[in-house]
Length: 495
Ligand code: BES
Ligand code: MN
Ligand code: ZN
Image (cartoon, rainbow, N blue to C red; front, top):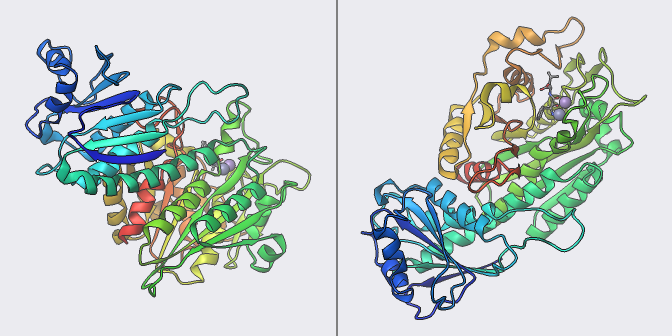
C-alpha cells in the first residue's frame, strides 16, 4: 500500500472512496467546507438535516451526485474536537480501513482535520490514523482458493492542512511501518501448525533478520544440549519436528548504553502432551507461538526505529506433542541455571521453555528482561479478552510499560507477583513443580519464571486472552490480533 500526503486545495479529487473525518464542531479548519464546495454542499445539508452530526465513530455513506470523480464518500464522526484522542483517531482510521477492503477501492483518500492546538500532536495523529487504517483493513485469504473477493487499496492519500502535511506524512509513515509488522504478526499467529512448524519459524526469523539488517543465529538440538537448556528440550522430545532456539540481535550504530533481552514463546502447536487438552477448540493452540511472532516483528520495527539500546531476542520453538518419546508427568528436568523442575502437568509447557531461556539470558547480564507468551488460560479467567496481564519485578519497567500501553492503545493490567502464592508450586523431589494448579494460575506461572531472572529487572506479558479477537472492533478485525507489537515496540524505544 502506497501512502501519499497532500494538502487541501486540490481542485479535482478522483478516488474510489473518500473518507472525511468530521468533528461535531467544525472550528478547527475549513477543510469540510472545502470538500463540500466540490460536492455542492452535500455534507452541509446532511448535517443540517440531522442525518450526520459527527458524533464519535458515527458513519454515513454517501454516493455523491454528481460523482465529480468521487465514487463514494464515507463520513466518519470524531466527536467534539476537545475530546480528541489517539485511540479515537486509530478507531476512525480503522473504520475507513475496513470500508476500503473491497475489490473496487483501489484509490482511497482520507480528509483529516487540523490537529494544531489540540490535545494530540499532528505527528502522533498521522501515525494513529495510518495505523488504524492499515490494521482495520487487514484480512488473510491466502489459504482460500479461487478468485479473491476482497483486496487492499493500492494507494492511500491523507489530505491535511498545508502547515501539517509534512509532519503528518512523517507520523503516518511510521504508523504504516508498525501496522504492516503487526499485520505480519497476525499472519504468523494465525498460520496453521502444519505450515508454520518450528523450522518454518526459524526460516522466517532468518528472512526477517536479513531484510532488516539484524544479526541472526539459529541453535539446533546439539547446541541447545551444550547450552544445557534441558527443560525446553524435554518439551520438544515428543515431536518429530526439531526444536530451534532463535537468537536475533539489534545492535545500535553508536555504542549501546544498555542491553535488553526479549523472550517469546514459540510453541507451534500445544496438544497439552500426555496431560492432553480437551478436543473442543484445540485447534486454537496453533496460536501458541504468538509470543514468538510478537517478538520477531517487534525486532523488525526496532531495526527501523533504531533505539540506542542493544536488543537481543530469544525464541525457543518446538511442538508440545503426545508420543512414546514425550516427556511425562513425574519427570524431573534440569534447566540452564541448574535449577530442577518436577513435571506435574505436561500442558504447563510454556513456562518450562521460557524459564529455561530466561535463565540462560540472565547469565548474559542484560539490564532488562522481557518475555511475551500465550502462557495461561487463567489470564482469561482473570481479565477476559479486554487486556493483557503483566507481572514485573521492576517499578521502572512497569511505569514505562503502562505509559507505552496508554499511548499505543494496547491495554494491559498488572497482576501481583506475591510470594504468598509460591507454596503452590513447592516440590518434594525437585526445586519446584511446573504448575501451581488452578488458583491464580497466571501469578504462579509468573512466580515460576521469576526464579530464573536473577536480580535483573523483568517484565512478563501474558497475551493468552488477547491474541485472538472474537468480536471484531474498529481496527482489530475478527481473527488473530497481533496484540503486543505496538506496546512492546513503544516501551523498548522509551527505555
Ligand atoms: N498455551 C496454553 C495457555 C493457553 C490456554 C493459551 C488457552 C490460550 C488459550 C498453556 O500452555 C497451557 O496449557 N497452560 C495451562 C497451564 C496449567 C496446566 C497449569 C492452562 O492454562 O490450562
Ligand atoms: Mn500448554
Ligand atoms: Zn502452551
